[in-house]
Image 1 (cartoon, rainbow, N blue to C red):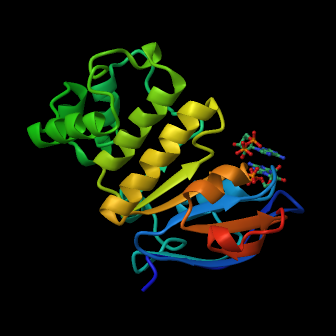
Image 2: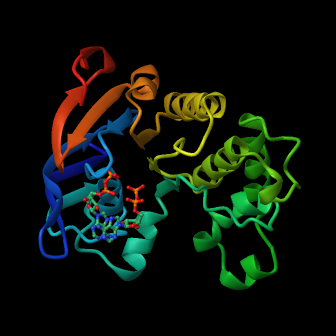
Length: 239
Ligand code: ADP
Ligand code: ADP
């Protein structure tokens, strides 16, 4: 059964920018999906419609058995807490240390007064340390986020997303600001985590070579429509 089911999704910005023009996709547990396509194809909009950062104009997004387009308020917050997000520009709190940045992802699940005083649960702290070790950041735990390299910052972003124990991970251009060495490390780690935890990952990229190297499934999008969907080996034409 699909973990995430997208049906006939349409997003029109303003009067006539059809960013998504009828997209239907089913994503299954453990898939490492890379969405590729030229700039402006609709990749970001697709991810934003999944976690409802934007409201779709038409169509359905069913995540974990629930229609995302109808829920709001607390129900939406709860569903969103099961969707891990990774961003191009990392979105870390720059003057805060690494472990606190990882714990920040749990804010929605921590009572406000506790998070204000930094009273995170021991279990969360331990798990944050474990995750940081796993991505090779054991020596950076108490460094300020802005003292890290871009690749290290993105690995903090991965840990922050994972600490939420998400059912799905969405990454919007996670390597677009990184050099090739760092980009490969980040993609390899995302791939490994996906395989190890059977965690569904949807990663937006504009570079086909990284998609071919790491994806279990590639979705090609152009002008808001799916133009390719299959294993990397089947992708022989440029998108
Ligand atoms: P991609 O991520 O593939 O580059 P986007 O989803 O960012 O594509 O953009 C798809 C189209 O929608 C583009 O034409 C873009 O200019 C337009 N667009 C994206 N976000 C907005 C917005 N907030 N308001 C208006 N148009 C937007
Ligand atoms: P991306 O790298 O995701 O394609 P862009 O650099 O195209 O993002 O856009 C940055 C921001 O501007 C995003 O929040 C996007 O939604 C918004 N945006 C993109 N295109 C337009 C547009 N034509 N009109 C208004 N906002 C836009």
